[in-house]
Image (cartoon, rainbow, N blue to C red; front, side, top):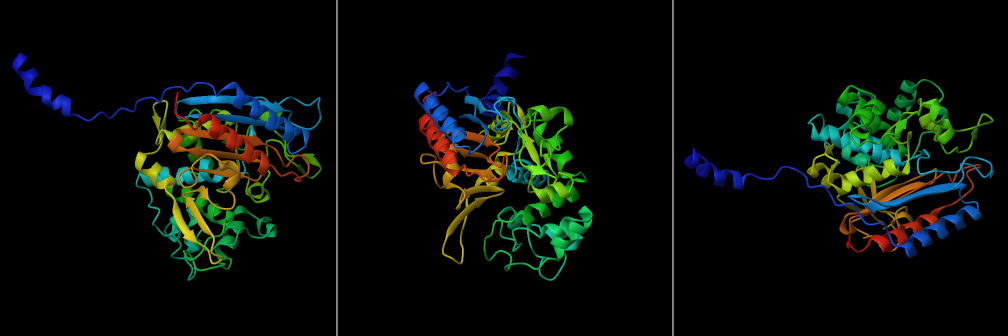
Amino acid sequence: MLKSLVLLLPILILMPDTTSAAAAAPKPIDDAHAQQIDRAVAGAIDLEMTPGAVVVAGRAGGNAFEKAYGHLTYDPNSPADTTGTVFDLASLSKSIGCATSIMILADRGKLSVSDPVSKYIPGMNTADKKDITIEQCLLHRAGFIPDNPIKDFSGSPESAYEKIYQAKLKYEPGKDYEYSDNSFLVLGEVVRAASGKPLDQFAQENIFKPLKMTHTTYNPPKDWDDNIAPTEKRDGKWITGVVHDPRSYALGGVAGHAGVFATGDDVARFCRMLLNKGELDGARILSQRQVEEMTKPRWLTTPKGEKIARGYGLDIDSPHSPAPRGKVFEKDESFGHTGYTGTSYWIDPKSDAFVVLLTNRVHPDDDADIKMLRKRIGTIAGEALAKKND
């Protein structure tokens, strides 16, 4: 028996460790930087850039700062924002819901990003679109215009998608870059075709539930309404718990480009999953390889001479990135996304750091700009977390 154990010992030693070591919980950020965040958000509320906000910052191992400010509306008698307030994430949906679903399907061999979209959507099998790839859509290089006219969405969802498939392209696929909701509307339908489930169901089962993002969903239930930050008015009523984006709304609240609602901590859990290379708290939703593919910079030069870097469903370096990235996070290695309603997150793997800012800046009349607040919060969080001294 002893002889057998001795013979096995070298084999046991050489076996690779397949378990993921849990990242250590970070220390809270220091009081000086916490107070700077307080002042920055309070100033933005005083200037009526947003009635309230939630800021979360941390590392792969957990949150180092999480705080809510202001109220759901400008009425001082309205409920105060809490760290559990749910926000309409707008275009953060592109990465959190849609692109991550695409990468999960790639992990499982259900699709390849090099596949033509027409393999999954027969309506794309036209002379100008049959060779558009999933990757080109993920990078906003498919040639689509930014958005179809809203009148194209007045009929059934099926007819709306047909109008996207039939619309004239703006440029030859792969030859340029233009940020396009249409690319992600198409990708949402690719998820449906490749998985056999609508995007919201697939994302719930394969992203939100395993990551314990318990207050993240498309089309929130009505009993969440009292804790959801309202946006503008639609048909004379405040939009609360219903997607703000008009095209997603016309499609029933579920679309590749917009529709996800979440809390700050849930968005932070998504950030931590990417910092942990695809897993969180023992739940792996993506392989390390697919996370690396998703977050790797793809550089291109536009006809105007601008250098743009995108990941799959992620912004890395574009006209939108300087604000959420701030002045500290690595320019070419960090990544994230912004949302029209006033939401953003940014992740810097080099410093093992992330920052989430959720606001409802479109309340009450879509007239506020929070770029400076994004930049200030991104910079403060970057300074507080720049050194891995936890």
